[in-house]
Image (cartoon, one colour):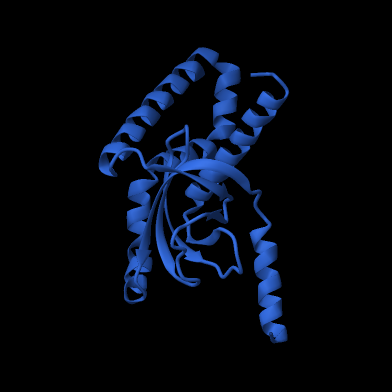
Length: 193
């Protein structure tokens, strides 16, 4: 291994460790992309992923307006409460729309998930370097994410897939999901739920 390759591998490991990983059950659909179709998949990704991750975009927009929302809650709590109800209704409609558009529930699978990628047992394991189209459904929230992932080389164990194409709103949805899951587990461990 050359010094340049070693440096690239160390940088990759640092990037991979930026995000917390957690064992989770998610809805999952994996579709291999043949090497000849990779360029097309990368070109079409933005349009296709925004169709799937509509709820994540709505949450990103809501989060951008958080300072104004806090002021509204302070000055006009009744109006703020009503806005929360309307937001929840929009979320429910979006989840129903996404579910109808994209085929209902996805197959539940055990994964080790982070905002950078995931590990899971696959039989047969895909070839290292291959590209996969991945549709994730975060449970129980129902958020859907479409991403492209590259299979990493591993000596043994589950297949590791790094998200190669992932919109910021979708990455934030994964981060929020992992934090919420951590909090739920801590509350259960401490007998608070």
